[in-house]
Length: 245
Image (cartoon, rainbow, N blue to C red):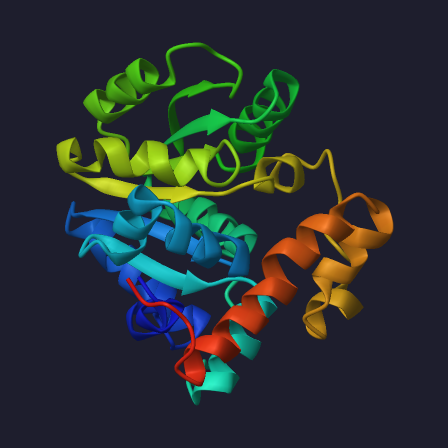
């Protein structure tokens, strides 16, 4: 699959209208797989057939998270209204679930992180029913996921990192009757309060990636492999030299 095909699938509106779509699916008891995509995920889609399947599924709401996705769209003449960070979708989902008495299941991260997030939810979002939680270091993740689906929570947040979280959801989504399923990467660290998100200056100027690199220099190679190579790949596709599948 060419990266250009993913741009046809992307949601291109505002965060508010994106949340309206997600909330409407919640109220209608529909299933929805939300992927907050950055360049790394799109590049994985080119390499991994199952990731490509997840990205292009009719059940997937593909949301532009990374600024590299926005910049890549500009190369193709694709305009996005704004970047929609996954952590902000999670924050709004928790607030909405609190207001409407929805249920949540949390799967992933270290045990102390997911337990801290559960404690915060029970303390600050008392309208939410926590149907269960599990850290990301348990064995038999597929069996755990089948149990989660059987509980039919309204919202399932999976923090196993890319591509594990997306591939796990994709493998089992056909069995989902209802609920919003979203891969959230490292968002539990921020949502639990154990780690601070980038200062507002970095968020406002779409350079959270730079803040993360200053805090964790080892991310530089990952940034190169995903964002820089992604822009080169997109340029090749634009000029017809990329190999489309």
